[in-house]
Length: 257
Image (cartoon, rainbow, N blue to C red):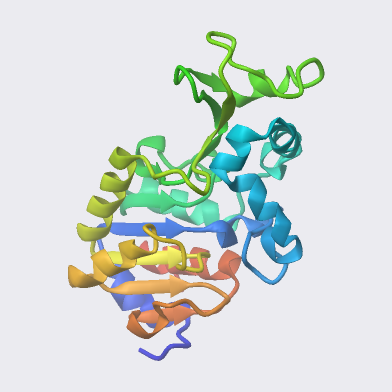
């Protein structure tokens, strides 16, 4: 296939795939009003200094940074965002029993909100919907912690008084071993590996493409910008994600006309 493929070009490949593993990045949620990080209008593109807010060591050592991060979490668009057509299309694949797994770099929970079974979603970078205590490990629903911000700008754990943070993976933190192992297994045991809305520049997650390719599994990429894996992919689609993913799902389910 050519590097500039269209959904119809991938139809035969998807129609014969019973076990699809899909990797999603920030690009799939931009249509829901959640900005990406590295795109032309990304958070870090517009404000490179904002990346420091995602550094684990800085967060743990600087109370002022924690206060700023908590305000950012409170105002995060994920709390009002709704799943878009791409999220819903992947949920359709899941309900039809065609998803091996949905691996996501996103923390917004929109795949589950769209109807994808939580057991099939592998959140490699964690989730904004839970807060973890860095002292005792206690988990608390994020809204309960955010409700305390008016009285406590750097809310501490109600159990041990330890520093809390969103249960997401920051720079300087390792991915959870069991989560990464699930993602690796899903990449190596599918019929087709589809990467959607991700720059494929952040490892070890980008390396899931290598695992799929080394296992003889075709790679399909849907992304507006070039990625390091484009020349190894079976097909690369530049169409808008909100159009391309529903079209791909329709071909996979035999519903496209």
